Length: 296
Image (tube, rainbow, N blue to C red; front, side, top):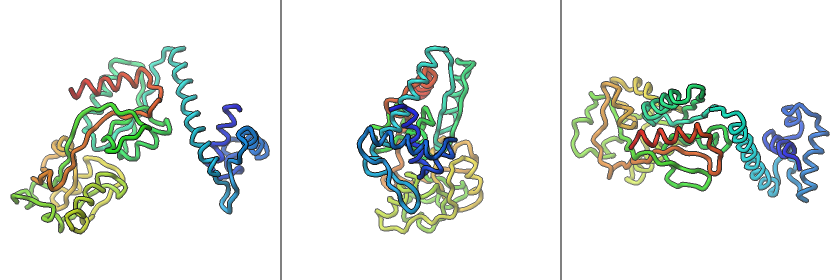
């Protein structure tokens, strides 16, 4: 079996059909069909079945495709490692980070890395933590700086950085700042600026309300990205949101509400996350070391 045949099978799975995959690969449909058949002959099982919408993997095909993806990533890692040995190039670091991570943590580390490695290049991706995991698994990112999932999996290696606590924030003129013994029940009638429903932070907040028999937060603004600039939408309003203390601090006019952790526990651990068994270039290894030294 040639590595190109694995690539052909993955393309058919990605496009859901021979025709679309052949067009993407720039080859004829008969040639692609024969390549898939070669693999099926070797494993002794059909990889795909035809449906009204195209082709989908069989049960055996799905298992094979999952392993083929890992083989491709390992092969690409091996090539990258050999290029580094052969040429001594510093290469490119593809770094993802969550918007809830304080900018100085990320950007100071990037600045130090560029000073140390003048020919190194960086590709930065800023997305919600959950949206960084798929590109990391697919080998599109080398590292991600993000809150560590509470349930760790063998798919990732985590280099712990620091513990952090998020807080509910509001404009400093908000009347809830003057209330003592603040409880979640006091926030029921408030409007919120929150990330999408698939984001863990939003789910934690809604779960806390539900556990106390309260209706879900009253959503006024929902965003699929995170940025300190979003807080300007809240300026002079009664809206609430959630942020790390370090993110909210530079925005004059906003303060955290005095809500106890018993009411809303938003403690988290932040780390540098990499795909398990992935090749980490010297550049990526150095970035991990810089980040760990920063937070000591």
